[in-house]
Amino acid sequence: NKTWNGSFSETVDYYFPGEMAGLIWEKTARCIDVQNAGVMGVNGIYTLSGTVDGVSAYRKIGVWKEQEVEFCLYRYDDLCEAKWWFISIASKGSQPGAHDDKDFYMAPASLEHSDIPPESTWAINDYGINPPPTIICKSELLPESGEESGDNWN
Image 1 (cartoon, one colour):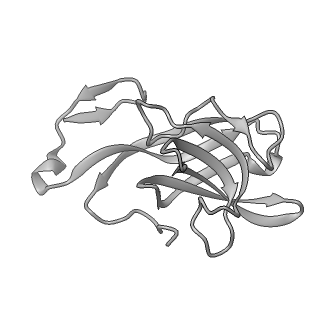
Image 2 (cartoon, rainbow, N blue to C red):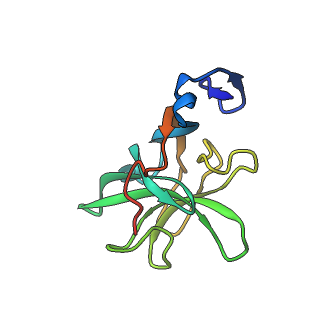
């Protein structure tokens, strides 16, 4: 069994008593700290809020063009079957990844850790301005018992 030790490149063996009760432990980022983006409203703490494309997705309330909006950070498969992470404003009532999203920044998903947003390979997209952001994943171990930990944008 593996437990997360604070580094995405290394895990250590550890026995969880919860496994006796049938719990599955996984590493996931509980929140994401987006920093240094040229669009100031994009910066800040995004919290875990369900799933998109089968992996954790995150939300943050912010201000853009003098209006309160909900920014989302999520992974999406494009038509070429590549996986990309986006920071966007999803259209009201739509799951992130719709064609009418306002996309600010995007980054290719890592081959090793495609379920975790990359820290530094972000680029500007339609509504973004330089510089692109850097991000910090803030993680802890979560028990997964088959129930969702948040809403699923459905």
